[in-house]
Image (cartoon, rainbow, N blue to C red; front, top):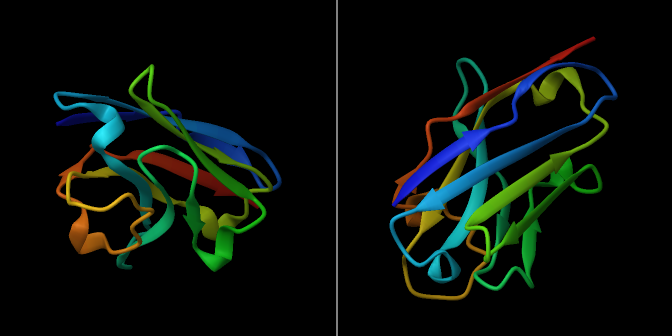
Length: 125
C-alpha cells in the first residue's frame, strides 16, 4: 500500500485546513485508516481513526469537536478536516493504514502497517 498525504501548511490560530491521503495498492475499503501526528521531540500520537466502512470514528480527546475524519472509498482517500487550530496542533501529520483483521476504528499505533510520508501543519499564534 502506498499512501500520499497532502494539504498541510501554515495557518493562523483559529484557522482550518483539510488534509487528504490517497491510497493505492490494496483494496481501500478493506483498510482501517487513521491520522497520527508528531510534534518535535514528542511521540507520534493518534489524532483520529476510522473504520473500514467509515461508519465509526474515534478521536484523541485534544481534538474532539474540532477535527473530523472521513473517507471516500470510491476515491481511495481519507480526509482530516481540522478546524479551530491551536499552536499546540503544530506537528507533522501522518496518515496510516492497517490491513489487520477487524472493522475498526483502531486506536493502536502498533496495528498500523502502512504509513504515508507526512504533511506539516504549522499554526501561528
